[in-house]
Image (cartoon, rainbow, N blue to C red; front, side, top):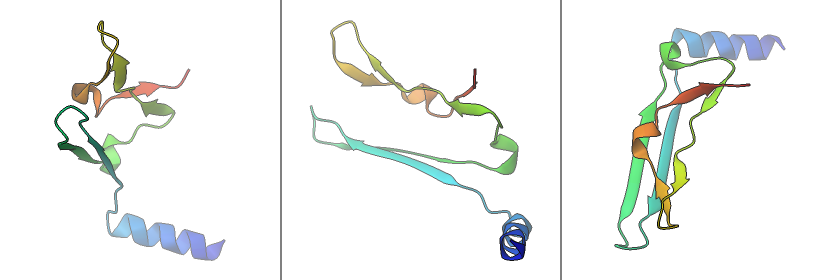
Length: 76
């Protein structure tokens, strides 16, 4: 347990932060689509979850809403 505390203190001292990367292929054009976000300590929200970015359009096709990529919602 003392080792875990020591590791946590080192991470805090070096200001470590997670990076979320999302990538996929656009099936229509074959192009690779990517999004990346760094989460600094002030960006983190306890008891929250990421906002859903997948939706289905009126034409029945699945869509990705990149504007919602950085969103977070409170857990219910």
